[in-house]
Amino acid sequence: MLKNKECSYCNVHINTELEEYFICQDNFIQTKYFDTEDENTFCSQECFCNYVQLEQIDPLNEE
Ligand SMILES: [Zn+2]
Image (cartoon, rainbow, N blue to C red; front, side):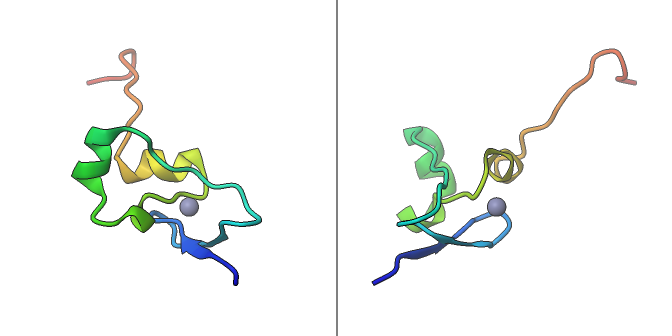
């Protein structure tokens, strides 16, 4: 039986037996962000960064 999950950010389907995916291992973030273990699934590091609203700050361009 195939195991399918979805990226929590972009909702792309991931076959977890065949495809690479990312999960967050940090306990604090896990309890804060994810209601279920399945939600802790991302197709890319970029999707995870977007999910936790990682933002780039450029001090030279700040107003
Ligand atoms: Zn994604």
